[in-house]
Image 1 (cartoon, one colour):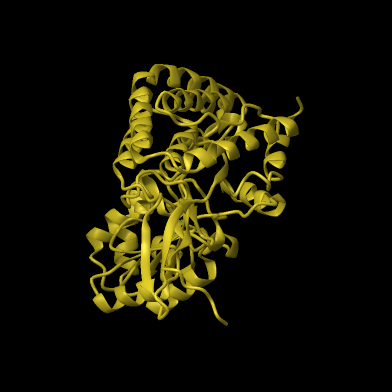
Image 2 (tube, rainbow, N blue to C red):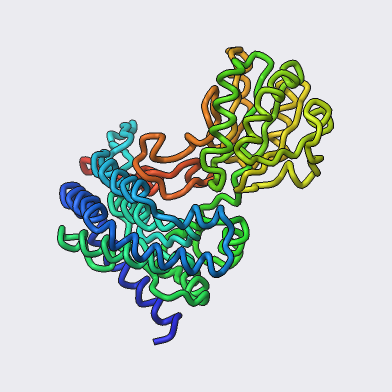
Length: 419
């Protein structure tokens, strides 16, 4: 069987499974999730062995430190995957929820009921935890899923997929509800994007190049975010101790992820003091600063930022720094260079905070908190299937509700239309 035929057969199985999964009761779904959560911990050594195979191949291929970090499954990350499934199991099942009801003058009662999207195709790079996070959310929301990870994580994804299938089928989840594309042939991605008869939505997760390629080729609706150019603005009225902690965490805690800070904006009224406080801390963590002219005057020895730096998603220990005149200038910068992902202000000025919340239209806008909190798990959504910066139909971290749509339901008492 060729790659196209193999992918088409997988998509068809997923479609058939989705019809049964859409009506599976919450108890069965929750039992399946908790079964898999326990299996992940019980088979951690099996997972680690397969992940080590991927890491060895990635090092031999010369992958960057940031990519190796995304690929690595530590015991803590395996536990986090397990905890995520437990949290998803504990969340209310959105399927079948009636979100609104109203009565028309003719007595008809109209409502909206949540239903699954159907079959979701997920195309992703490096991070094998996506296999578990995405499959768990799809299962709870009643969606079948076809997962195509990157070749660098093939052994990790296969073993995680096997554990998911083993655990869920024991609990009555239909075969075909969770499938991991087994081949590393790149033709599999193109084949998946042509299955519009079977797949209802595509969600790509990875670098900008991957996401743009998927959006360009797909015959199926795509939920996407191209990159995460996240900003923190340190306002004149900022508590500088808070600002230090927030900016360090936003940049350094995990620089290779999409919600890490890539540009730090500093109000000119506190720029000299704040930059001199934070620069040594960044230096101690190995962060390279690229600054505007004023930043370079204050610090000296800082590389000049170019126009491209303001648009850059480094995913590494590199940070663009700009001193701005005021809140208006900070908002204007974000509106021009931002990616609609996550932006934060550090301030004790209530009015400035409210203006920032109103006028910055990113999918997550924060006051006095690290951009690293832009995450489905941190928001209480359980795991997340991705962060959408496409406003239709979801915006921001996508949890269970974002993996459903609504249909109209109508109760009548024999009414007929006369005009």
